[in-house]
Length: 286
Image (tube, rainbow, N blue to C red; front, side):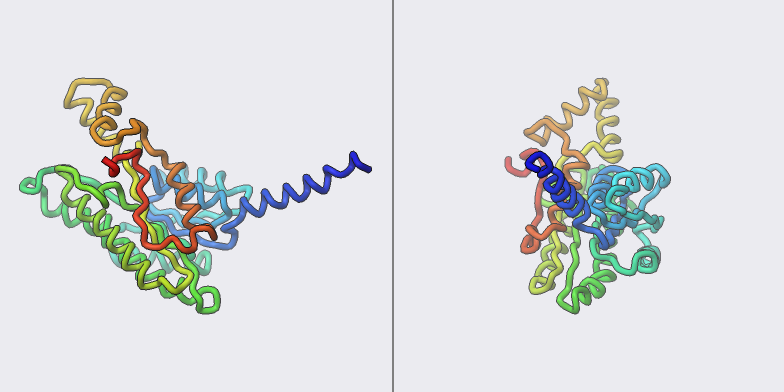
C-alpha cells in the first residue's frame, strides 16, 4: 500500500497545476495592437491562464490567432479578432460591442496599440503628431471609458477588472526626436494614475507597464535605420541601440512583459494600483 500512495499525490499535483493554468478561466481580455510584438506576447500569456482573448491589429491575423489559440489550448481559451482602427472612435466602440457580443463581458483591458515617428519638433509633421496622440493615447481613454461601467458592475456591484496600459520607459523619461511618442506615453502614465484613483475602493485596478527596448517590428525599423546610417551590420546596430540607453544590454522580451501582465491580473496584485512599472534593463535608473 505504501507504494500506491504517489497516485493520489500526483492527482492533487495535477489538479493544482490545472487550477494554476486556468486562474483566468471565464475572464475575457481585450488586447489592442496584439497581432505582433508586445501585444501578442501579452495575449498569449493571458490565454495560457485561460482568459478568452479578443485580438486587434493590422497585417497577418491568422498567424497570431493560431499562436494565441495554441498558447491557450490546454486552458480552454477562445480567441476572437476585431480589426478596429484605433484612431477612429466609432471603430473602438464597435470593437467593444463585438467583444461583449462574443464573450459577454470584458474583464481585462490591455491598451497596447501604438505607432512611432521620429523627427525634431520643428520638423514633425502635424498629421503624424495627431495620429500618434490618437492611437497611443486617446484610444486608451476611449476603451477605458467604455469598459469601466461593466467592470464596475461586476462581482455584484463590488467591481472587478484589470486595465493594463502599455506605456514605455518614454512615459518616465524623454528622448530627442520623439516628441509625440513621449508626450503620448507620459499621458498614458497620467491616465493610469487617474483611472486607478477613481476606482481605488473597488476591485478594479489600473497599472502601466513601461518597457525599455523590446525587439518588436517598430524597434526593428529603428535598428535597420541605424545599421544603414552607420554602415554596420544589424547585430552591431542592435548593440549600438542598446548601448545608448539600456545598461543591461538586453532587449526585454514580449514573454517577460506577458508574465508581468499576468501578475497584474493575479490576486497578489489586488492592491497594486496606479503604478508605472518599468522593465527597462536599468534605463530609467540612470
